Length: 183
Length: 247
Image (cartoon, rainbow over all chains, first blue to last red; front, side, top):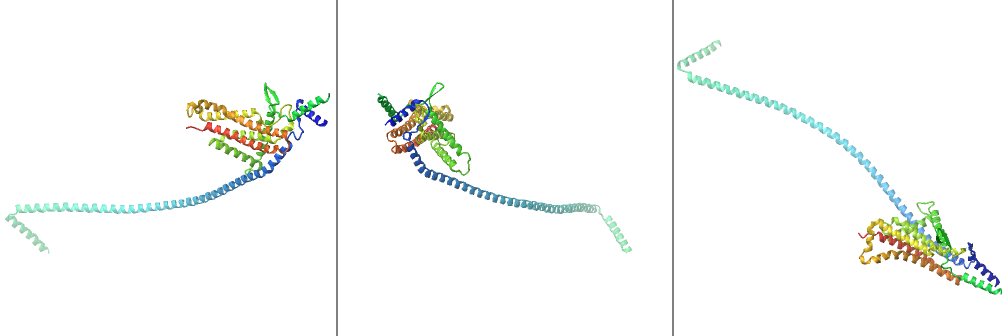
């Protein structure tokens, strides 16, 4: 009884002491209950928390793996596309070169053909001009001849009387006779 | 002659051991203010726990998170989800605020329920959860008020105050009253719940020291967590509400 009283007195003096201190009374500080609560909490909470965190970790891992795979696939596709691009560029270059030479050849051919036909045209033009000139000259000649013949005929018709007629005939006979003589 | 003072002392001792110290505080004087030192001390402990664990967790960040980092990332994800559901699309800048509220309140409540504070004795009062004191919860609630005012004003400018006369100007007094009831309800809810939890535990412990308080302590843990969640959710909801546009 005295011990208990003393402990009470001792406890009662604590707050009025006006200083910090340690309360060593296990029951008053509720230590046992706290230990039990914390223990139960750790015992049950650990499993739940572990599951939760493991799930999260697995999810993150799978996400990372998926995205890495996607990335790899994309890189492969990119590489393929790049190779195809190179091939197509090469082909395009080839085609371009071929096309250029083809065009050059075509151009030359065309120029040659055109110059040949140009020459022919020139020739035929000259010929036509020549023929045209010839024809014009012939026409002029014919006209002059006709006029001369008509003039002569007119002169003959107008001036030809009997005496002249006879003289002419005689002269002609003389000419013819001389020609006969000569022969 | 000697027995009477001794018995008086015994009674006083009995009174002291069974007495539940409500409303007793350990005061510090700082610049003319009386400060509840036990709240400050426990707050510092809580802050130290939070900062220390965060420092340990992020000391060596990995791409594939290991235990501590994984746990903290999970918490961060939880807080982000919470703020996203409550605030909406522009939740980004408010995650730190909501997260601070939630983590501080949660760790405070659980420290009150799990740490053996009573081992350390103060000249007056006793150590308990920081949210056990009305000053802490009022401070947190006022911070929330300031936060949602800031959110609304920075988002909509002065047209934020149009919400007071919506849907009709008749509701103006009620809408103004709401700005006072929000921090009031936030702080009183948290304070009341935590104080009640701890009081019930203390009273039960003083009556039956073993086993019986354990279920109540678990209940206290549960409500503590719920209260932290409620506080954070409501803060986020208020911020979201003041930011949502009426178009």
